[in-house]
Length: 105
Image (cartoon, rainbow, N blue to C red; front, side, top):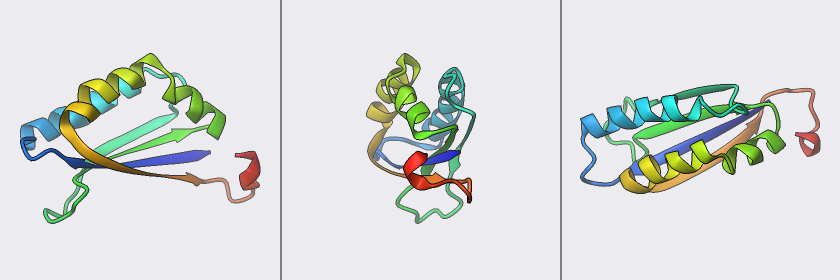
C-alpha cells in the first residue's frame, strides 16, 4: 500500500470558509476515483504552520497512483481547488507494507 501525503500553502485570500470548502471538495471529488482506497483531508491544529491544509491518499501501488494522476476527477480537483486556492504544495509517498520490497511498490 502507498500513502501519498500532500501539504499545501494557501493563498493569502483564502479564509476559514475557503479552507472548509477545500476539505469538503477534496473528499467529494477525489473519492470518485476508483484507484483511491481512502482519503483524509484537514487543517492543521497549529496556527503558525506553513502547511495549513493536507490530504492523505491511499493506493494499492505506485502504478495505481500514476493512473490516479491522469484521472479527469483529479485534474478537475487540480483546477478547481489547488490552482485557485494554493500557492505551493509538498508531497511525499510512503510504502506501508513492511514486508514489501520498495522496488515492487
